[in-house]
Image (cartoon, rainbow, N blue to C red):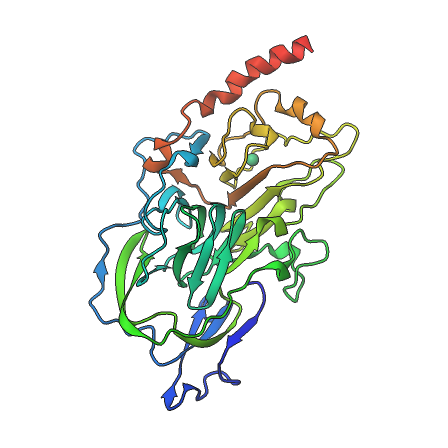
Length: 411
Ligand SMILES: [Fe+2]
């Protein structure tokens, strides 16, 4: 939920007679979350219900289920997503890398738009997507949301989307949650506005640009993900983007990561200060999404800008590095690195990163990374994650400690 919006034409009073076209009763649909109790939108279809399928539902020839790794011991992982290939459209390029009962992290690296008569619906999870590379338009029944590098896209579960690229290829980090996604509540006041102390400004979202309804017949396939990544082909006899209007609080939107305005402190700030979104009721379930981007590092004369070792036993932490400027992992990561630190393990900066970080004291950093922390949920890597993982990562602290000790000794 961000802002309550109203687009196009719809009746003034809910669930009352309305004609978007003369003589044709428009049909109302509620797209809701948390049953009938959470954020929702009211959609008016020009003439057909979205329930009108014209072919027996059939399993797709592909599925998006996580492929469990046979041997994945408890250890820190470094998954080099830049090494995954580009190809296909948004749906077919999608690969799950980390997953748990309520959370999944996937990557999609498409090299083409989705076909004109094909659509995608994540029927089991809400999505927060970070655009590492590429630009285009996220089209849905709500309208069009343009996107570009370093944007987040939030897509409520059940939205019917079509990914259209304007660049030859794109690279998306997909964070999926069983629970609805919204701005971090500790930054919102009781009216749902971001407070004046928050790093986010909710009015900086890019909401869907309303597009006139497509009132057109023809077979339109919606690849619908459900049941742990299975995909069913649902065929409508009309175009799914057929709304005369909609109003409500549940809709896809973009939020530039640069619209996360970092909060600085004299000494090191813990990640909740960098939180942008959360799924569910964090810290009781779901996950938080933090944006690590340019900010003034601690200016205390003895501040250590690198983080402390931390052991958040109720969280599994995944961190995606858009660039390599993050000092705590210098010499280890590459653009597109996804580190995974399960809650049962403490983790810390490597080598002499803590010592080196003193040079950043009081300066503006240039890193860009996205962190996802689950709450009371363990994730595990898939076969596809292990295929591009850095096998030396688990021992990197040990390897780099040797160098660090000798450098400190000779300093
Ligand atoms: Fe961490």
